[in-house]
Amino acid sequence: MNALDEIKRKIQILYQTNSNIHVDVNMSKPKVSIINQEARIKGVYSHIFQIESNGECYSLRYSELLTPAIRINELENENNLRILQQ
Image (cartoon, rainbow, N blue to C red):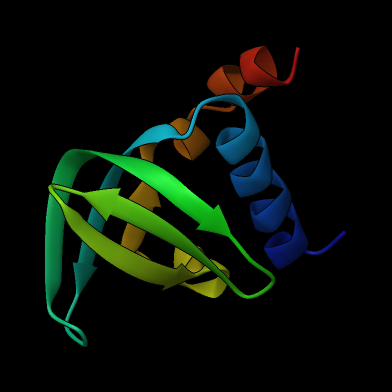
């Protein structure tokens, strides 16, 4: 399983167990700056997933999680993900 498949799997687990997450997003196109905000995963698709934060919806590519532009706190702590899987 490559890194991108692992990210997709983890996002799917979060979506199915507890779609409320905490994110940091810092992108220039489109201009999005979210720092440690609570968000909700709205949908999980083959190449993107959607989140809603502060009433705004954003579509994010899984590959963007491999860059410093997007960080999901719940994925940073592997213990949180193991608890959700049980």
